[in-house]
Image 1: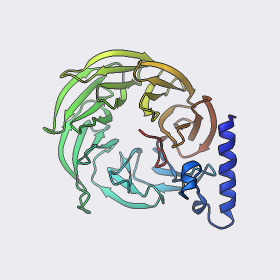
Image 2: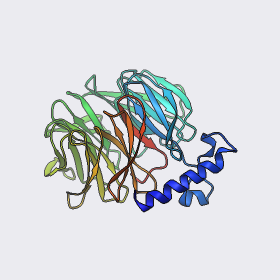
Image 3: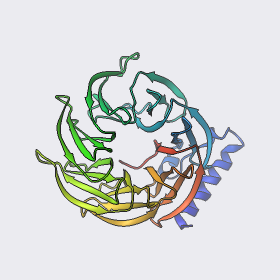
Image 4: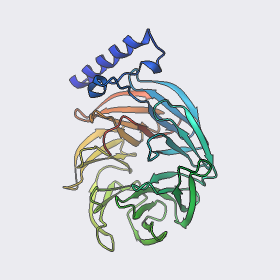
Amino acid sequence: MSMSLSRRTLLARALHGAAASAAPLWGGLLAWGPAAAAGARLRPIFVLNSLDATVSVIDPVSFVEIKRIPTGKEPHHLYLTPDEKSLLVANALGNSLTFIDPVTAEVQRVLADIVDPYQLRFSPDMKWFVTAANRLDHVDLYRWVPQDAARPMQLVKRIAAPKTPSHLYIDSKSSLVYVSLQDSDELMAIDLATQVPRWKIATGKMPADVYLTRDDKRLFVGLTGDRFVEVYDVAGAAPKLIQRIATGAGAHAFRARGDGRHLFVSNRVANTISMIDTQAMTVVAELPGPSGPDCMDVLADGKTLLVSSRWARKLSFIDIDSRTLLRQIPVGRSPHGVWTLDHAAR
């Protein structure tokens, strides 16, 4: 156990113990560090249990699951609304979105008739909401109209995306949506202004998650059917493959460390997590990734990586600096998306 972990664990236990006698478990979640000085509270950690149609709510102080929230069938991914008041859980087989308060973990509403929302994103300009229909082979472009309580998502265009659109990324100018097509080994870019594909290219085997650098110049693509991350120069009119980075078998999901330079990729078959220097385009560290690592988040301390271990039905906590497994928390079947409002920069 690292020294930083020991300090954090002791403080967390002390804070939780002090509050337990005066308040229920949830009411006693106090922050450490700068947040503690301001009297702030830690917000919950959410884990989507895809095969159970539930969300596990984790207490970040006691490190236990405090409740499960029912959702529609097959919740896989989640995303925060632009006003940061709702966490959207995309229920792919349930054709719905579950709105959850990211602070209180209470369900706010369920929005039906969102067809097969496997992956989801808001554009940076807060005008577009985009979903990838992994099962039905299309990408849906919605206008985000939060003032319309009945229809905040208004479908503008459905775009054919064969085969198996998997993950999405939108550039900083809200002009292009990048889409990986997992079962046709392709990458597609959609122009938001015209709502038509701008280009489509061949990639390596089973492209999954995609990540665009802050300058919109380099696009990283995880190859779940291989052991590489491909890097494309997308600054010009046509994309150009510039690097193939060997990471580990089943390179799948990304999470930026938050320092503007490093990127984590979960290698689902190798059971490892690689940290990539996005400027040098090389792997600079290897971390453990127990039991089919998938989605990740980084806590606000910048030192702790959260990983959904899909085959073990657990949420894993990894110490980034010491590259060690800190703890695992049991959750539901096939945990996928993981998120907390108390996260490092993305």
